[in-house]
Image 1 (cartoon, rainbow, N blue to C red):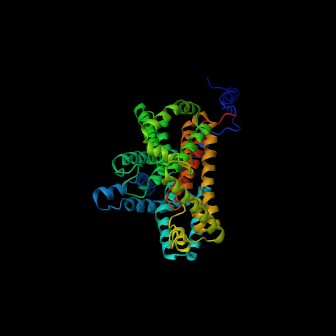
Image 2: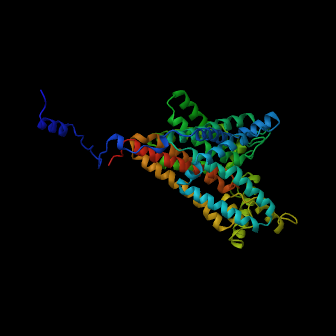
Image 3: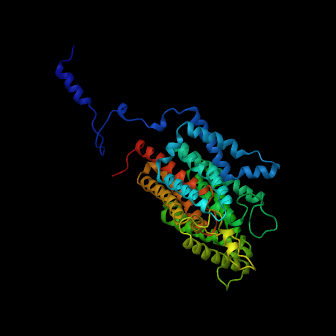
Length: 453
């Protein structure tokens, strides 16, 4: 029997799809624009990303420095992975994609002012060398992360690289600890100093925490959380008072923004951690950690604090005296040493021990503003990502990742208020990761279920 035209009309009307509740308009699946990042990529991009992962792991684990120390010669591992990563980044167009967030513009502006300040430096040759090193080894990390981590799985791989780098750091603290020192410090490397090692751990430990919170394997989860506990103990054993303050700020931030279940765990484990601190940490370390005023017991710590106050005052003085270009990138110690007489016929010859006044006094106030803007814009991107993911039950993985990255930034930025770590790869890396995570999260927000009204 042949159906009538009326029957066909009723059939079409019955099978016509209805709009979903809460969605303003409906489009057939074939009309939904595809995610550009899900398209097949060029071999250059895939190879560059692989090299980029290796580079991130090497920089945070310091494995290239361990190799040089243990083997007695340098294999130049950084060059082996960094050059192909950069070439692939440029060929595949990743360099342009790095400018998807404000941190890239602010850090590029900072470097431009860095370069402008160099000709006015009190020691132009040394400042030029510092500028070239920052461009070649530090700023490049921002572009590699922001330009290559285009999808959420790739952002996770970048975070895994940092987390496993943290594992290597904890093993290094055991194998390469400086013998005969009351404070935990490494025998060699760019973070051999106990204060800088503590700041490094403050940054990478939250990535190990993220690996534990997001792991499906119970064994990996327990191992990661145990590693976080061991890392906190190492931080305390460095006897770095700046790191202790940063650790306290981290705890407060965790209680403010952390997941509810983890907040309860922190509150319950807090008294246990205090007991472990008193029992396991040597008395000399505890005394130094709590020595902040002249009435305290550790005279070395008091002398160090007084020296830092002097250097801080001098850095403010030079900032106001040379507001545009400072005394020259990397030249605070030499300028202060040649223009003051506090130790015989010369000055202290020490760095500022404050990354923020380091930039202001050496590169000028404009560089300082761009430096702070790079940090704040990274915080804002991560905060916006965390806030949006928190509204979506199906995006708990993104919420946890954004929170842990922010936690690492908080502790590190507090720690560098007591350290001269302005011209290092850490903050550009975090800026690039903030850009990548924010953009990848936006793709996931569009592809997953819509947020509740």
